Length: 446
Image 1 (cartoon, helix red, strand yellow):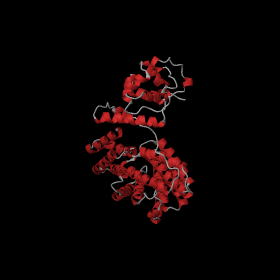
Image 2 (cartoon, rainbow, N blue to C red):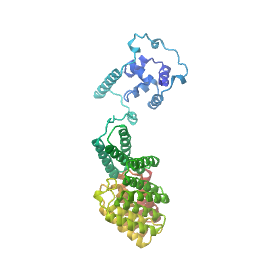
Image 3 (cartoon, rainbow, N blue to C red):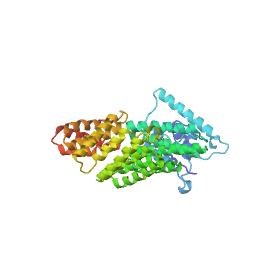
Image 4 (tube, helix red, strand yellow):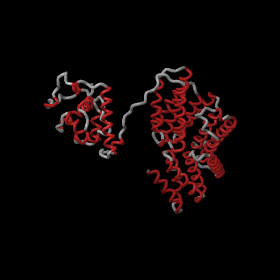
């Protein structure tokens, strides 16, 4: 069995017996035995005193605790000191404590720690608060019903709201943790109907985990979650969700500058959208594909796809669309139209005018809670106005975009400010534009 031989050896190096260490730290000898046997780990409130007793840092202690070793790979230890010699089997201390005894002892230790804190006598180590307390998961039910899936769906909706308003950085770790816990539900028994619904709920949750990871720049993690989401959505035979995940992947590729690859992903998404019969999903994929074609300089494809997106959107019944597609509304269609025309390599004055009208329209339709989308669109609108030579108005809008960027935890917003900064650098002689560029550089650094 793996033991913490390095921890025991360190104790002997500083000349402490198990009883001596226990007395110094304020625990029973059996607790030290369990630590060295790797049965459990010291509680966070014990670690500063334990590290001090062993004459090492808390970080070095964490390293000793993290890697139990197999005794067969270890050199023969030094002989026991007199007070550590094995005792007779009749000695109660040599009998491994029961789990109930362990729990009771932990309860006593917590009580003692609480008493020290209550009277202001505890030695507190703020650095210890940075370390995780443990990775235990709450127990999952043995059988899953519709109520369990409803709770999972409700949690996902709440996390989506946080993501939209405050950025992926505000909730990404919570989303990933929820997805990790939700995977346990796959081991539970359930009816076929509940099982399909569970796979869809988990696919939607993994899609959100991928999206929030993308939003904070964790691209490898995003791709892993998107892949899992695709698999579960297809397993549950839900093509509209497959289309949504492919949209997310396409947006990641577009953000990374891989326009050709994003076109292909959006085309796959279109196929899934058509299979689902969801006009809103088809409109979403067409509009985003138009944006990718704009970056590639293919204005004819842009116009064709935007026309189709408008037709599909006009025929869609948004209220009847699946919840993972329903987010795509009038403001989003206008935003995609504006983005497409704004991202043509050399837009004409007329095309820039279309982009400006589109951005103004979508911003007027946005809710205040859609802070990240507003930041994207304000930044792009400011960039178009700078290109048009309207420096004063561009500066005003640009500062609004930066105000939102400072409020929302999203690496994507910072990245999307880069074109605005590049245009601002062309007008260094204008004091207000120069200040705008300075703010962008500052937020990029932080």
